[in-house]
Image 1 (tube, rainbow, N blue to C red):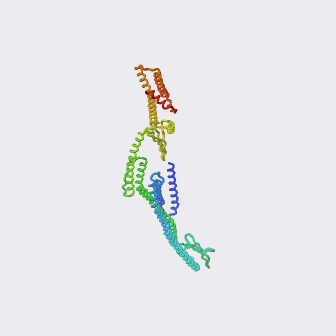
Image 2 (image 1 turned 90 degrees about the vertical axis):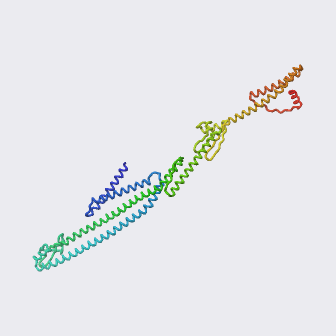
Image 3 (image 1 turned 60 degrees about the horizontal axis):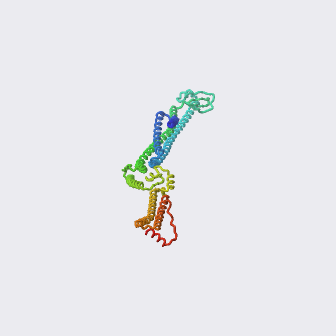
Length: 478
């Protein structure tokens, strides 16, 4: 608000100063109607101010606008300077020519008037000198002849007075001339009236001088009027240039701006934006068609990539591996990883746990765009390996238990046969019982090893006689 008040006061001050300057100059003009001239001048100044305000508003809108429509502003600048600079040069040249022509024309007229006035003045002066000289001679002759009374009757002589003496010949007054005539009869003062035609001619001469001076002042006014019209036309031309530049720039840039807005929306991920074809019949129409085709291709490619991405995500979610991707855009995980560590895991805690947990196996793959961590839960594999180990151990234990059971069963069957036949020998009975007890003790050792989960006994290499081995086998299985 204060800014507008300041601008209004500045304009009002400028108008008052211009009016004062014109009043000072108009006072020197005779027959001038000050009110009409000031009204015309103020109307002209208001018209100039309005046009300048419109031009400045347009220029401010172009140059100090928002950051948008940069292309339109550049085109408007190029068109404005391309059109306005030649017109500005032409207007400046026209102003100089008009000023010089007006000065030359009016100066010649002024010189002609001055010469005419000077010539008239010289003619009148010479005529008056001749008339005064002629009257002096006539008056002198009449006074010498004693025609004093007759001299008073002359039409141009106002009075004749005898004076003691006079020391001048002619003295000019406002309405006549005073002649001092000295003769043998005495000295006389003769007052001669001026010619009425002479007075009128002198008045005309004064009026002519005023007209000449007014004409000189009129020269500046006429020059100012011409300059005003040139400036007015220049400002109108500037306004038309600005308007035409903005119109052409908008006509050229609007289709490109619409394409730019669509491109920004597509860049933001909105591929459903509608791209209209510009029916301009030029390169812009070709550009809009190419842009629309490109948008359709991008949309088709995006949908295909989206389907492939969904398929890849399903595949990754189906994998038993926990996948963690750390890139520029953050973290990406699959379903297995979220089931293992939760939806919002701490990366450092996850990596530490994966490296310390024996049931987890981690593999780190480095890439140019980020790091990929593959975390596998191998607890089922460990369990399977343990089960297989236990299975092998049980088979081995069963085999170890079965080995002594066979001779026990055979020896018990032998004892049963001996008992049925009544052929039990104390020594044989004792040997068979010892063999059975030995195998039972062997079975007991195997059971103790299995119960305490002790590792299997290491093989002990020793020398023995093959005949003793055959003899022991004979005892066990005979």
